[in-house]
Length: 257
Image 1 (cartoon, helix red, strand yellow):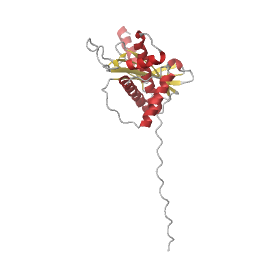
Image 2 (image 1 turned 45 degrees about the vertical axis):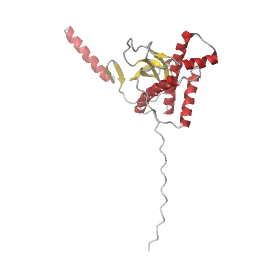
Image 3 (image 1 turned 60 degrees about the horizontal axis):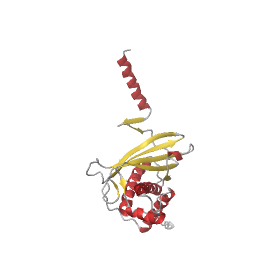
Image 4 (image 1 turned 180 degrees about the vertical axis):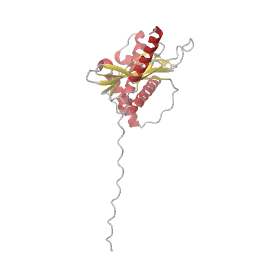
């Protein structure tokens, strides 16, 4: 058989082999189409990586922290603030997923045992638009900064194997007035996020509002996309329907005459 014929035959076989494997390939990504995935035992949210142009500056937070733990070198302030912002984003994602009924917690793939299945979420933060000499100092968290985008992926770990099942981007959006939340609900959410942040080993000092708000807004946007996928897979337990009021008992029929 001529060489070009063998090459063509091999490509055809490889193509149909991919179809038989139950996968659709597009834009370099592989997505499972084999049906609903079984609900994992855990949903782990890993630390996010920050592009060098994404900077977190919170002088109020560092001042409050130094009053509690003492002064630390100036060159460490930005790194410590970045770590604290990361923990705020992760904690917001975890709290949002828990509120929806998923067993979420901070962690990475090395925390998954062979007897567990887990959905591991990870990603990176980058500028939301091309970096130029004029805007290079405008990306991040803090006064005068914003335009942070996120590239997020989620992989299923089970029996020692790993399979990517979800990738998405979260683009920066203008801050909008969010729906009012009852004070008790807001307090419970704040306490949940604070508890998760502390469990990650981060200081429990709150970030300043102009840093905390965009960090939480980004975390909720990421959680919303994960919840859409979880709903498609049937992982979310639907809320119990309220019992309908019982109908009054029928009146006794009159005896026939």
